[in-house]
Amino acid sequence: MTSLICQSLDVNIASTNICSKLNLELAPGQFWGMLGPNGIGKTTLLKCMAGLSPPDSGTVLLENQIIDNLPRRAIARLLGMLQQHTVYVFDASVLETALTGRHPHLAYWEREGPQDKQKALDAIRAVDLEGFESRSVTGLSGGEARRLAFASLIVQEPAILLLDEPTNHLDMKHQIRIMDHVEMQVTGEQRAAMIALHDVNLAARYCSHIVMLFGDGLWQAGPAKELLNLENLERLYQCPVESVQTSSGQRFLPGN
Image (cartoon, rainbow, N blue to C red; front, side, top):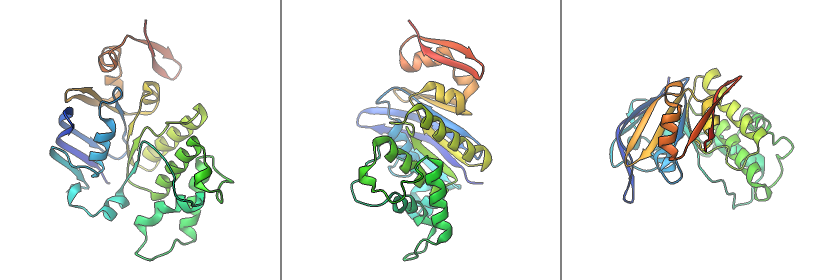
């Protein structure tokens, strides 16, 4: 099964040290959440893990191979990344855009077949965009565009999912729908996911593991049940935090 491993990873942006000597493994069946305040470098770290930007030192391994040595097409068959912002500039239909997720699996000049189209239709339905297939992507709302970007990732069928704030611009219903689908991919299909979030309670509800970025290169990673506590969260966000016990587990609120 495919895994993604960070070995002694140092990542910086400008003069900001995002992480120092980061060691973690995204293994099949694990749902990781990445938490940290605004501007701490979550997006930059995700891009590094995806092989889109090099670390300052250390190594990212995909299937036990250095990711920088792999062709992008080979990476795309195994790893998919949902970027933080979704903007469609060029006119295309919703179905055509969803089908782009199949491109890493097709030979050069090969056209999508009936099975590829069905995967795209199933993904469009999964994100509640059924009936939008012929609509132009340039006319979608922010939330609809976000859901379509996630549908394209579903169609890609990567073993490793890296998601940068996938619930951004979404209402509560669609936040839960997206998170439920990622959870299904992780637990049902034995994929691995890393998701950058601002909502601690979504992390508490769904994530099996957490990595926290504190700034100045400091980090902590491990099982969510061990890391999600008042001490760590108050240190992370530099504000008081209260906990509430609910029927589905511990949840967190801003304190006084």
